[in-house]
Image (tube, rainbow, N blue to C red; front, side, top):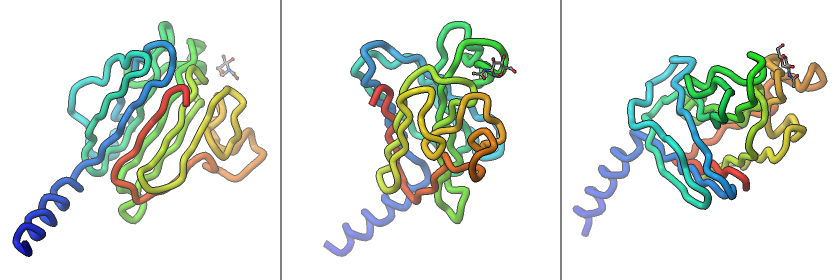
Length: 179
Ligand SMILES: *[C@@H]1O[C@H](CO)[C@@H](O)[C@H](O)[C@H]1NC(C)=O
């Protein structure tokens, strides 16, 4: 029995070299998602494109340790099909996103919801262990999501910087669309 526990411990250590993100679409419509490795400051995700997730469907992706990037909604005419680089700051359609910096803060993960490129879909991030973030409309609170166009991250100059961001030592995360 001890031997099999040792094997399990080794398997657990190997499994820790990556992270699960479950993308669950509770919307009544399909969501098309782009994963971007921007700002290319960590280990790039090189897996298959996420593509479309139908109404009521979910999809798991596996990102490497120290993945740093974003996952965005990419409505037509948002420009977010390419690297999540479009949206309202470019005078185009809005695209909601989540931002991720895995294993970056003393081995823990920094995550947030961002409407900096606009709000196009309600989102919730649920870490397996850690604090949930929810943004269900364009005016959601600054401690839940970055505001549209607010690149300073200060809630339009009214609050502390980066109050939308959380840190969790969670291996896996779930993102719910239309929570
Ligand atoms: C965001 O900034 C862009 C570019 O300055 C501007 O065209 C757009 O109207 C702004 N949108 C909002 C919601 O502030």
